[in-house]
Length: 95
Image 1 (cartoon, rainbow, N blue to C red):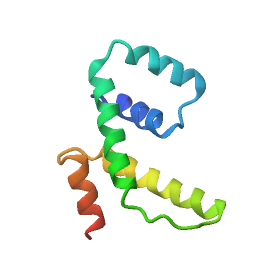
Image 2: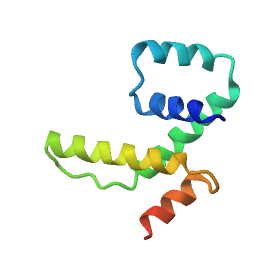
Image 3: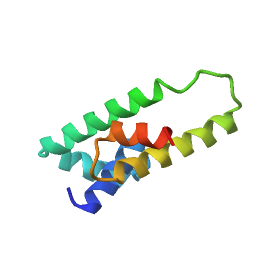
């Protein structure tokens, strides 16, 4: 996967693609089983990681700040190459 595809894929998953780019990417997805599988894999991994977050009552601002930090961390972890995503997440949080 080329670097531009990785960036677009990450933006698609976290919902930050513009409507036009999202439509273009979804058209591309129809013919790319590898990208469809990658999206499913990443969403599954993100879901697993989010299950470890505590459920607490926070203000809307606090939730938005935390959500942005989690998205940023996930993007950084996903963009690394050698290990599986799950191994990188465990390594990141065990430091």
